[in-house]
Image (cartoon, rainbow, N blue to C red; front, side):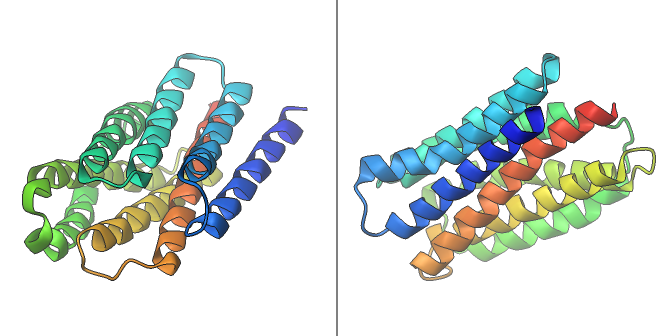
Length: 223
């Protein structure tokens, strides 16, 4: 029953994502905001169905903050975009990425910090000339992502963990980092904003969030 309900929720999330992309340039703002946050809400419901312990709160908090980020980033002014960045840093960065993943493995693997730092430093240097007043918020944001990539690499290298969990976490990391990199390039005029890039950004973002919610479920069942 839980499996059927979970599959249904992920399918509904996929449908809302497709509708958001379809109506992106033609729909009413209220409709777009609803369609944009619904996938994350469905991921959250899937977590509620499958996880009922203290990790549930951490994972749900991260997903809810991600939904807030989606909401703010769809609004037209830079002020709302700052709120979106803060929401994502708070939820995905501090709560979900660090606290939740630190509870999965106690390994450190500090060598994993090297590729993590290189990836985010390269992205930061590409957008740095166009950051303006966003310089420090984006710098902090990139620092949090360094830690996230590091933890994903650490989990993937932990041979004691379920192989499915390790693969899911690594792919979630790749999807989210790729999505945020493209979003940064679009926001700060490195690439020209278009429906194609917006669609790729949101698809990668929702895939990453979906995989994160699935990783919580898989971890719970393999613990």
